Image (cartoon, rainbow, N blue to C red; front, side, top):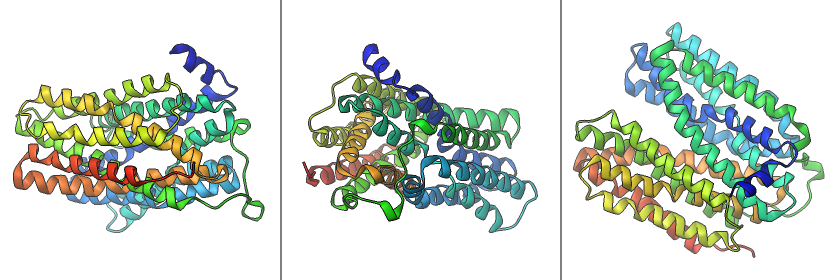
Length: 389
């Protein structure tokens, strides 16, 4: 296993750009929660904080594909220098707006500016792997490295922003996120030797975007977003019902740990001949594993179920990235990957809202029906999707 990873990471510049992109992705798991914590610490309601956080998340989702398209056409470095500055400016302006108690809509506008400039380095680094690796059998390992990096980000980020905001200074969590995004983006921009070549519009050649394939993949990503958004609410409600609300973070970390372990394991396996089959089965099992949790009444057993479900997350995401790499033009790969990120982001909010409504009506255990249905729906889309090869 270690030989497989060593061979991939020993490629010139690979370890550095992967580590840099991991650092610059921390705001993905820090900023939304950091906004909620800061606004509430300053006396705002959770509803008000949630609206500001939603404005940030939706802006990032809406502009993500455009940022990916610009990176493909202008080059990653050009885009990274600009978004690094704009993101730090947006977060800084938001902190000033909260500190000086600016009225609506100014804090929301600042949050939107930061969201629009959220660096899409996860998609960019996967495009770098695709450009850097000549042995295509190694792409599975490369994409597994990034899936593991994503899990690390979503394990460390929420804990870090909570500690900084509540234990250090209430603005420190968002300040750290802004610094990580800006410096990480600039550090990645400096690594020009590993970035894919720019393809300006007037010199663009090759086939158009394969929307017949990418559209269903965005729908599958949306289903995954519903799974992720609903699961967080359900676990928080379930542990609260059991009288141990503090256990929610532990259970969610166990869920992410399952995905991390699976990502490491998948990365050591050969590239699948048909990644679409892996995607189909992985998302089906991911959704189906929520079914038994509807009947579980203890936190330890829920944690076990979530750990097993986590095993299906990385294989699902890795297979999806592998498929997109095969099915879309290389000159538009970054844009295509950001579309799936947008799909997931868009799915999170309704997933959380629907789960909350089900929990209010029927209790936390019934809430597990939401990710069950979403996962199975995503599986149906995957099973009806066809590739060009």
